[in-house]
Length: 140
Image 1 (cartoon, helix red, strand yellow):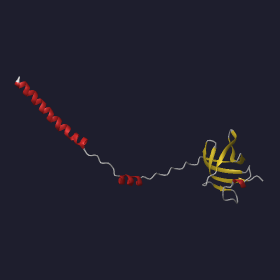
Image 2 (cartoon, helix red, strand yellow; image 1 turned 90 degrees about the vertical axis):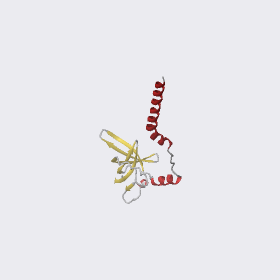
Image 3 (tube, helix red, strand yellow; image 1 turned 135 degrees about the vertical axis):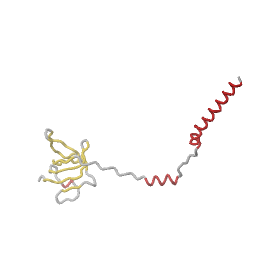
């Protein structure tokens, strides 16, 4: 009986020693102090992060057609094979380049409705953001 108690005690001590040897390194990580960033370090990292400019969408539309003024807006009336009389509302921006003969700016009010133009830009739904507008011929 004494031998049995001694053997159980020895096994318990060995298990405790092995447990301490194997789990002690992991305990250091649990008790390690945490380092929080200082406000100064946070500000520096915020300064370093600069957003990259969004790439501009490529031009996806170039067509020759006629300008039509309707309801306070200008439209390009053009045709495609099998689809006559298509129209897109023109969106003129500050970046739009125009070649309207003697006019350098994009004042479409100086152009008569029905003038033949070539338009290139970014098409989306029923509008086109005009990048370039060139006068091909004017209706007199």
